[in-house]
Image 1 (cartoon, helix red, strand yellow):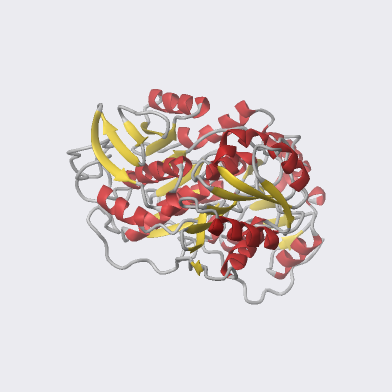
Image 2 (cartoon, helix red, strand yellow):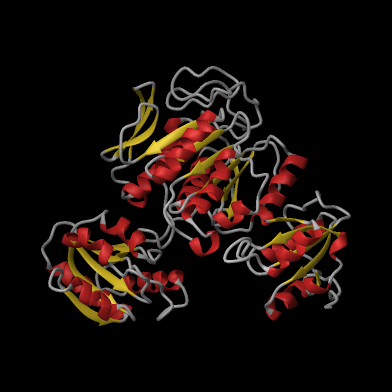
Length: 537
């Protein structure tokens, strides 16, 4: 057993978890959010026993004053709960040994999102809580919602599966909005998940090694929608069969559901008409939000993210006009369709986050006249599924281990060269794009591969691309605006429909929130009556 070192400079968790005060909690997994969770439990008065397979993680926890002990040697009869890191298997391919020990002892198995939910109930039950999940688009949607709320003058905390661990955020209180990205692993460990606004974007096969089947994966994700609290709003993308069925079941369960689609018109919901979001109710249009010209929201996938963000922000009372203003200012997330510079008509786009063909498809569908930098550590299936978009590619520049495989796939259909490394690819693509004479040429890094053959991760790869673009003679590099994750100061004051404390009255149009007043136009929450002054839907 490793005894904790003398406690110096203890960093108090931002949300002390008091719901396990004076009880013993076991914790497995001290990487990522695990240490923050252990500190939050300890700060709230729990007796924490933590463990991790990695010696470095155990050492760091011990230095932070956490009792570290192999959970195989503890007395499980005194353990109230096992808090599991979301990266540790709960069910598939088989339960982790710590899960088996907990279940044999009758201890519940939960995660950090569950601890947040219970603490919210204990200290600020009506504080607004927006939770976002889905296979694709979670991070962009989470960041966009946060950005809109900040422009509206709200007190916002963002975290979870993006950026800051949820228990390292400021505590819930009336009027403070927590915007939380939830992975399927986190949802699986949060049986009490009950957001004010729950967002389900889409379902495609993913993480099946951890969920067994897509049916089980979808069922786990659905818990976020099914758990939306009374008077809240479920926002559901209906462009895949699994999510569409979730929306139907949520309606049957009496939830207030806002459907979103980028594939078809909706008589009730938010849908994409060309490059404009349309808010409809009862077959009539209530509001239109043009997306054309917003580079950070380019592409139909981002239109889905924008529709979800619009609905979520309406669910906590932000006026459509404020949402429109905020979306036009959204800087986007790094490495996701990030416009990093231009040289004359040539645009340089960093989409390093596209680590598989499905993700790269979204970028290829968003541009024409593409000078495409692709490759890295290949994934199963390669780029063959992208063949319908090859006619958009003027030339491809192939890098990394996948270069030869991708060259074979492209064959004579697409002009290409094996550049080998990113620096050579950027130089060649910039040269060719400038000389092409094509309308609006784009040098696009969208690798459709993991980065691990040449870079530690996709972020480092994207940063390298950004720096290489800066070195191209004549390029006007774009400085990133402060992203929502990095913003620390809240805007002072508020706007109509974006008042920090609450949202009086009905919305002028477009998805009225039903918060303590009438709803003259648009998708009002039928459970209205609201909680004036508490910022709750």
